[in-house]
Image (cartoon, rainbow, N blue to C red; front, side, top):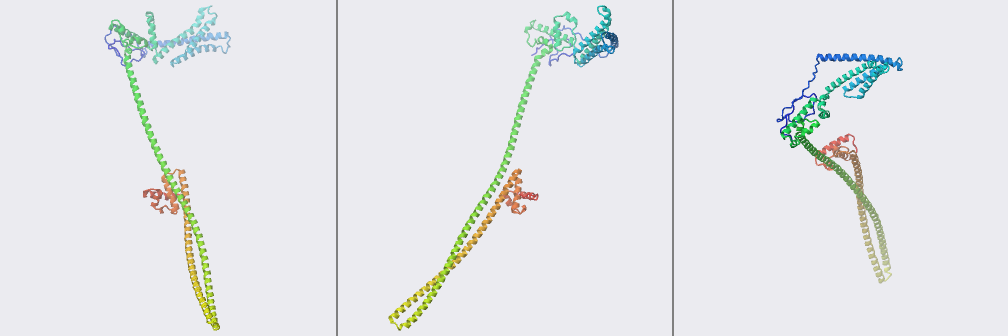
Amino acid sequence: MTVIESPPTAAAHDPVSAPPAPASGAPAAVSGAPGFVSDAPKRNVIKPKRDRLMLALSLAAAVGGTLVGAIGFAMSYNTLAKVALSWGFSEDYAPWFPVGVDASIIAFLALDLYLIRKDTRWPLLRLTAHAMTGATIWFNAASQGQITDDPVKAASHGVMPLLFVIGVEAARKLFIKKTKLEAGTHADRIPLHRWVLSPLATPKFYRRMRLYGITSYPEMIRREQDLLAYTQWLKRKYNGDLDKATDDERLPMRMAAYGYTVSQALALPEQQEREAEKREEEAERRRLDAETRRELAQAQAATDRLEAQGRLDAARIRVEGEVGQARAHARAQVGAAERAAQAEEEALETALLAEARTRTAQAQREEAEHRKKQAAADLEAAELEAQAAQKRKEAAQADQAAAAEVQALETAAAAEARRAAAEADRAAAEMEKGAAETRRAAAEADRAAAEEVTRREAAIAETERSKQAAAEAAKAAAEARTAAAEIETRAVEMEDAAKLTPRQRAVRRVARMALSQADGDPTQLPLAEIQRELAVTSPATASEYRQEAVTLLAGGYRI
């Protein structure tokens, strides 16, 4: 925490260059410190408006420098061109030797100034220019013989290039300062008298200025005065014992070596507390943002899961519906095929039974024919028997007549015996005739029975033929149903391959019903039959299916 009372600072001063940014919230001034600290001397700010004297000086410097440079280069050119011939240069290249030497000086110095302006210094250019200047001074001085032989003569030839370089260095110094002023990086120099009068404290003074970017010498003086005044105030507060001061109160002395002012050092604890609070607030805000983002991500993930589960359930229900419908179609087709097979088996069995019954009826008919022939034979035998009895009767009558004729001849006993025998023969003949009549009636009855059996067998045969025809019709119907089931199965497979919707499947089923039952006209199909076949409860839905089937058949659908 900061001290309750802090000493006043030195008088305010506007530095040429800005000091380090002060801490926010630092106390502007405190009461209680002695007010004997003198203000730092103010600098006279150079006004951008040039007066006549400065203009005249600039013109004189420019004209004089140009004149010195021109004379120096002219004299150097004349001297070096002559000496180049004596050094072995050809007459063609000897005049270019001084141009190359002197032009390199101008080029390197100009390029050095350009790089300074662009804040891209390269000391090698300046060193090279100075080396070439030294070379041209040496060449000019040695052009008249040994330098030691006549130093004055040698100096007269070498002084002009030296003057030119001195002028360029002066211009360079001014140019660099102007560039630093414009860029705000110019730093004041510590006066020589300070180094002389305070040789121990001035190096620390200089170190703080250079290390912490304090470019203004008056600003640095003000800081030193503020620190001195604050130190004196603390000593007065604690009776000369600075050890009693708190750590926060001793901060200005500790932080002065690091470029802090008294106000900045005293404001550090509060500033750090505020920054710590800001960091805590920022950390709390980031934590809350992270929690919010995490909750949003969890909510989004839950929403995505619910949506995915809903889509999965919908897809499962749709697939189960399609699978159930396909299974129902398959079960219906399998049931129809089983019923057709059963009907075919029953028809086959009925046909076998009918064939067996036909064979039985044929055997019974043959047996009846046999009995009929037997009865006819018996009737013929009875007729022959009657004829034989008649002949025997006639023979008996002849014998009776003969006996009557012989009666007279025979005795009465013999006649009586013959008469008794004749009566016995007559009774036997009558009995044989009755038997023949009985056998004839039996033969007639057998013939009638045989005819009845024949008629019954014919009726049975006709019934069997009807049953066989019915069985063949049932077999044909079963084959038709089987073919229809196969067609339905192929149609379902094609619909599955085409991934049709349940409604499209239903419409195609109605179209197939129309092709198989109504000669391709769906309007002839009863709505009740469509409802029963498609298992729908609404007649309106069945009517929609029928209308769509009409459109589908009109478009060329045939499967």
